[in-house]
Length: 436
Image 1 (tube, helix red, strand yellow):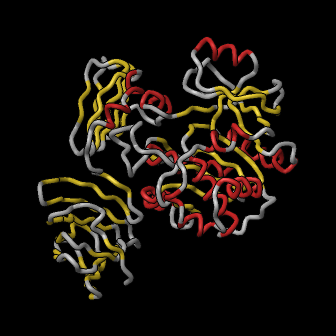
Image 2 (cartoon, rainbow, N blue to C red):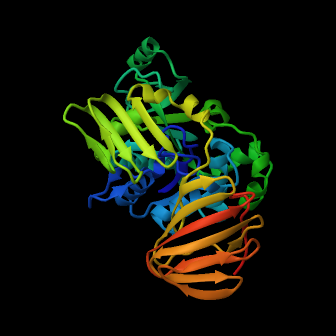
Image 3 (cartoon, rainbow, N blue to C red):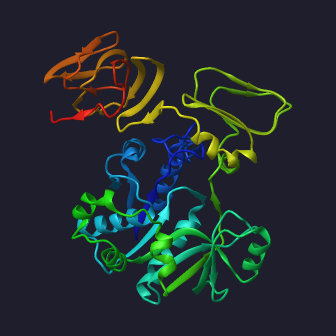
């Protein structure tokens, strides 16, 4: 099965652990079979490949998330990168062109598009696999997977099928209703729209050509920033007369808020957290190097990172987006392809960062026009390359890099370094990539 995983998000829903670089799907709050913490994207990728070892998975994502994906899944995972955000239809169109023009997937092959962030068990991806046979039967142009509602929720859109059969043609779609209207929909056999679509690749590419003028994947990529922002639902689903839906009744949770995340995270607390014996229904995550003590609290979530601290009633946490948008701060934590980047001090004209690197990985070769850097090796060994000159480094070594000097570091072992940036413009925009 060919699967496109949509990995987007702007980092507002699980603040302060999520930010514009680390969206919720990269936060490690779950555990694998070995008891090691893993993220949503890691969990989902492992579930898909466990259910179908031959699955061809491509992750459609923004440029800011590529490093985190490589950090968590390795360099071999297939990634279709959006040059900028243009909503789900352009993202899926670009990914479809990528599958055909870059990966050689045939136009008659089935493709399923899935979000990367639901909390599900393996039966969900077993059901996704069943979509392939339905697509190849050719009964409908689009095949959806709808979730059997457990409550008359106001949070989701509804698919109204023509019958309550396991597979049915779709009668209509309804936007998020009030509770009483949702009850009426459910009585008609309605399903939650979980954003799972399946189709023959040629169908989607033809649809994209009918709406966008382009020749192939690379041409579409080059003009991507000119595309209209529009969702796949509005652009395709709501205008397609030939749609069928397959019912799914297994575990499915949309982890869209701290309240929902608290229900599925592996442990009640993570990090240096102490709850006293009077706490009830409290979850806490601490990414700081200082302890957090929580006493006498009920139905609360506490989350602390270098980007901020949240203390909230669980139910109220779903209303945090507008408040987070009003908090203007630079990103203080990011996962890179080589390891992690954590801001530990920010002053006017200077920035102090802790970089951790995995053995065998390296930073890209680059230079800055408006800032100097000083690296102090804290642990591990490696090699620096500054303007083409190599130097072995070990704990205690200091490397000074003037503005304009090309530089990189290669980690021979796991390596940690403190980087002090000094200059008039301390932004990622002042980073110019170059060949070594």
